[in-house]
Amino acid sequence: MKSKLSVDSRMRHFLTVMAVLAIVLLGSAFVNNSPTPATDVQQTSEVMVSNSQPVTSASDVASVRPVKPIPKGFDGIKQFWQYTGFYNCQRGHLIMILVAFVFIFLAIRFEFEPMLLIPIGVGIIIGNIPFAEGAGLQIGIYEKGSVLNYLYFGVQKGVYPPLIFLGIGAMTDFSSLISNPKLMLLGAAAQIGIFITFWVALSLGFTPTQSGAIGIIGGADGPTAIFMSSKLAPELMGAIAIAAYSYMALVPIIQPPIMKLLTTKKERVIRMKPPRAVTKVEKILFPIIGLLLTCFIAPSALPLLGMLFFGNLLKESGVTKRLANTASNALIDIVTIILGMTVGASTQATQFLKPESIEIFILGALSFMVATACGVLFAKIMNLFLRGDNKINPLIGNAGVSAVPDSARVSEVQGLKYDPSNHLLMHAMAPNVAGVIGSAVAAGILLSFLY
Amino acid sequence: MNTLLLGISLDFGRIHNEHVMLAAIGVSVVFLALLILAIIYTNIPKILNMRVRNLFKKENGRKPEKGEITDVSGEVNAAIGAALHLYFNDMHDFENTNLTINREVKRQSPWADKQQVHYQYRVNN
Image (cartoon, rainbow over all chains, first blue to last red; front, side, top):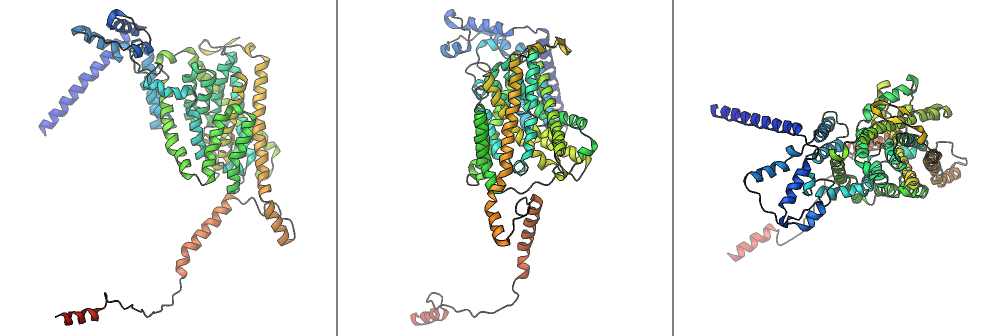
């Protein structure tokens, strides 16, 4: 017992010493926060290269692979120190790591989109571990030839978003939309936020292509936002992707005040007609008609809409259960993990912490709020023309943004607050999935104008 | 130019006619695409139920009223499903209670015949 206690206390001492050491090293990183610590290492690595041929770029290092002499004695320790994260740490790295902690905390404590925020949060930590960027170690996400860079290729070239859409299609049940097609218009109304944000971004001094990519955040569709920024503004992709996914996770916080502000008590308790049963034939026809119609109108959205409707046909046809299962489980999970992690890692402080990133975050919030408001207001406008039990509860208007199924869940929760027996989830799913189609069409239109 | 928080400045002069046009066309096309889809899907049940309507008309000599064939709500479907489930679940309670004793006919087999085995045993010993 005594020995166990002593082992515990020794362990505690050891941990305390290690913690103090870590704090001291962190502090030293702050104090000696040289703006370009990488240059020292770069110089060191240049010295070490045999025949004194300086190697400057990462790709050169990969191809030449010089035999370098092992530094002796204190030089070796010095070199090791220069390669550590503590030496290369800048204030930005620590800020981003703190941001990552917030993401992980929100995901675990409040369960805000944990499937996204955990990979993104860990990705931010991975992307912000300081290292000697100029040494050609090929470890950073922006360093050509690094593993992270290979994974990031899928984001840069827009490979992952269509695969995510395939999974979404295979998971989505469009029957609520088919049973009450007029609710599709709410999904269209919420896309107004995209174009208003496009204007605001222009007036802030962003170029038209950058503004288009920023505006799509209002669609609340992470994959579409990544797809758009990969085409229109690759330099802003990190900020746009993080903003889009952050606001998607914050749907339960952003939307309710706007919904409450724009509706009356009487409107919040409107009971909607239960959706009718939808036949299998209708469900099978929906992806085929939807694909043909939307892609003929906006062919630029083909990679997204094509995959969305393809996934849905896999599900609804009933004869490709294995494929539908893979698309809606294994495939989407794998892509979500890689996408979330690489998007998070793309926020490397040296590339990410710029004034434009803050502007994009502000614009993203604006875009999201405008989209929510447009959906709710359009439901009220529709009610002017509808009678009896055809009336729409405006609390489902917020679901026009395509954060599936979170915004529909917000409608349900808000509806239950004012009438505990009024379930709006099924009704809200209709504008929600229409929003997915609407934001992809809007992206296609922006691409055809700006690309 | 209006300066907002954090030195961020807005200049609406940067929005040109072509940008306004882009947004107007964009919003219209999104609405149009989803409106057409909505119109198609409002009418598809009518097309799909045309055959059933004709059958109804033949059998009843009148046109079906609105919602008589289609528009079965999910709730009604769920209620029908639950009723059927309960009915089939309770079927075993109504099984025939008459017990009968059937005389079993055994097939003769040299392998299973006890007498034959005994006889063989006696002959051999």
